Image (tube, rainbow, N blue to C red; front, top):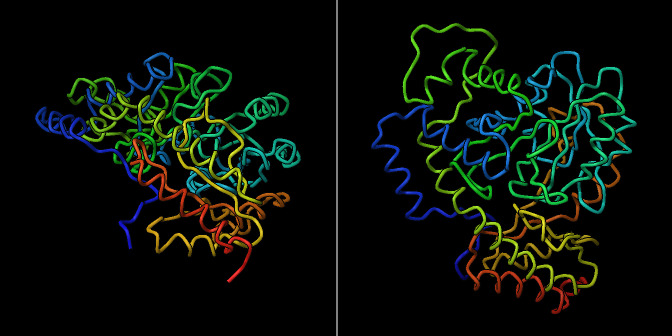
Length: 383
C-alpha cells in the first residue's frame, strides 16, 4: 500500500517553530502580548478595528461566549442546522438555551432560511448559521430573517476564514462572527478560536467572559503582567488563548493567502476531474471567493461506501462531514423541522484529502483513485 494521504495535514514548518521558540524565550506562557498580536493580525486581515477581535482557546469557547454576549440564556431557543459538528449545539446548551435544528439547502449545504423561519417562536433569540466547507450560506437570507423576527445572528465561520461575500470577508461586517483555529483548520493555533464583535461594549463583555469575569486582566496581561487589585464583574470561563498557542497562530496567519490559494488550486483540479463523472455532485462554486476548509463530494445511489473501500488500498483516506446532530442520543429530543435535504445529503457526502501546499502527487493519486472507481465499472455497481 502506498503512503497514506490523510484528510487533513497542517503546515508546520521552520517559521512556526521559530515563533514558538521565541514565545518560550519571552517566558510569559499565559495570555499576553502574543495573544494581543495575534488578535491584531486577525483584525488587520479581516479589515476591522483591532479591538473587535477576542481570541479564545477553542472555536467552541468562541461560540459559547458569543451566544452569551448576544443575550442567549435559559428559556431561549437558537435555530441552527443539524448538518454540522456538534460544537454549535453544545455551545447553545451551555448557555441554558434549547437547540432547534433546521434543514439545509441543496446548493450550498447551508441553512434553509424559509424552513428556519417556520421554526421561529416567541422564545427564539438567535440564529446560528454555518458556512459549510468555506462556501457561503444564504447570508442575505439569514440577515433578512433576523431583521424581520428581531433575532441576533451568531455566524459559525469556523470553516470560512478568508471567504468573501460580495468582496467583503466574512467576519468584517454583520452581527457576531466566530472562527476556529483548531488542528485541522486552514490556519491553526494547535487549538484556538476567536469572536469578532461589532461594538466596544460587547468586546468588553467578551473579555470578562473569556477570563473568569475579571475586570482588569485582559489589559494588564496584554503587557505580559498581572493585576493584583482586580474585581470580578461578570460570570466567566477559562477560555483565554495563551501566548504560546498564539505564536503558532501568528506564524500561520502570515501565510494565510498562500495557504488559501494553494487549496483553491486543488479544489479546482478536483472539480475539473470529478464534474465529468456520471451522477457525482461537486461543490457548486469556482472557489474564487471561497477559502476552502474541506472538499466534499456527493456520491448518490448508495455507492459512497464502495468508493471509500476502493480508495482505502490506494492510500486515500476519506472523512464524512457530518453525522447529523439530530441523530445523536443527547440531542434526539431537540425540536426540529423537516430534515429531507439533510437526511439525503448525509448518505451521500464524503470528504477527500485537502491540504495547504498539497503535494502534486497526492492530488494526482486522489483524482486517479476516484475517477478509476467510476471508469472501472465499480461506480456502476459492477463486481
